[in-house]
Image (cartoon, rainbow, N blue to C red; front, side, top):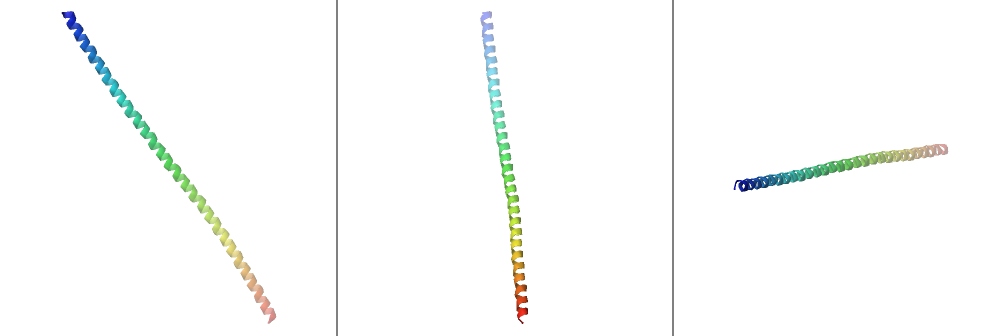
Length: 103
């Protein structure tokens, strides 16, 4: 009888230990899933930050290129206008000199 009670207690103890182990495994699995989820979320945030930084860098580069192109266009236009003005002034001088010569 004592041996049967002892075996019954042993079985209860083993079941309790197995239940405790199963519970720890479940908590460990849940903790692992949570950690993996947090790591994935962190990676996604990092990728989003990198993507935004790349977009900002591309926009800044495009703005710099546009500024250079605008400056060049302004210089070209200014040079063209100056050349036209000088050409017009030269023609006016020539016309004035010709008119004075006729007088």
